[in-house]
Image (cartoon, rainbow, N blue to C red; front, side, top):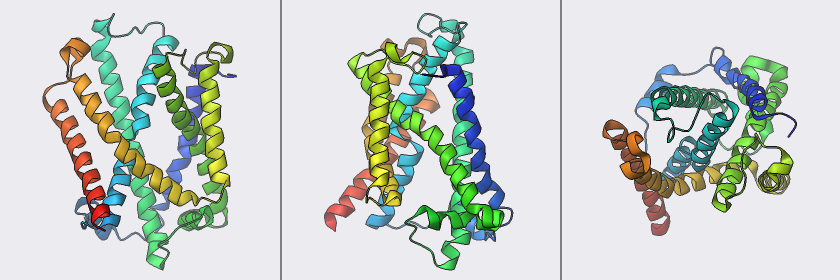
Length: 288
């Protein structure tokens, strides 16, 4: 790998700035803010198959299975990149600061991602849905959401955002799959390793990236592919969350860091909510 782990992380932070374009669009797009606030706080939902499937997809983009593997793997990578840090099993005194750092990082990251997601939905609704465009099938149609801000430069700005998020998505999506497979197979893992030290991991990343490229260049509708991959993520996340909650609450495994109280209750509440939504989706599909 040309860049070491710490350098790679520093480089990949900058493409996230392209996402601020959607926040800027909100200042110039004609958003019905009262309707938008009402829809966010009190969404009108029904028990139809389409609504439940979309809800599962929404959960799948927020609590995605690959994030569990990716965040855990990156914490392990940070240990190798920062010699002052040690794993909490052997240095429990570092637990307090480490968990606070992880909490802040997670809250800021999730808050930013959800804010950008809301901005994308608001601008798309104001620019496209309000003008009768309700079925987006190509990136050329999606780019119109940036037209109020960028005008004739909308395509270039959208392309910059796609490239930027793609640079972030490839190592996260392909990398998380490689981490999961590698750890299950007990291979040497980590982007901090050189290629000759972790050939199987880098081969898995290359294979996953190649499959993604082949799918995107094929006849499959990319928008529908993204939608259904989110649905699959929402379904797969349920058993992973259940196992994770079981492990995280066991003192014989986690020791002093076993979760309890409000955090444990919130975790099981989220798991139960996702399970109920997935079961409802399958139930409506079966009845149909």
